[in-house]
Length: 143
Image (tube, rainbow, N blue to C red; front, side):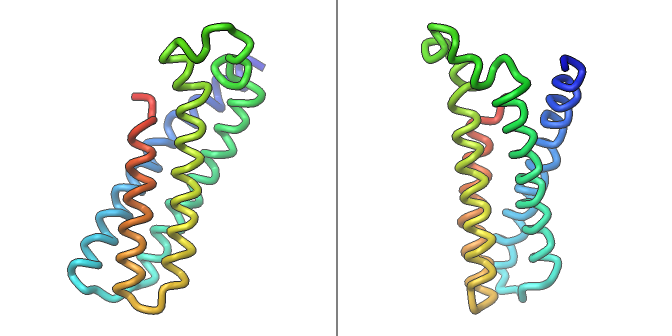
């Protein structure tokens, strides 16, 4: 079980860099396209799809760690001082909740982009939602 924990934790650790790169790329691409009055292309759609999909995989890995494998997850609440210890609180509460919000925001952004009737609206909404998701991710990503 310990080896499985290490493998899942390492995948979760390294996948965050891909997600962070995709988040920055998607945010900058949408913002540049919005400000430059560009046409919405299949590349724009695919980039946001890859971003949200990798976040979903990361969520599944995170849930597996949080509920079943990690001593810093739900089992951290067995200790009396979890909320008083900043590091324990980060892993037990702040990181999971903030990342869940980031994923919800990114999914909402994907829906809003798809429902928007104009290219300008797609890029404007994508910039807002994907930018917010990126900010949430950066705020509680363990460095």
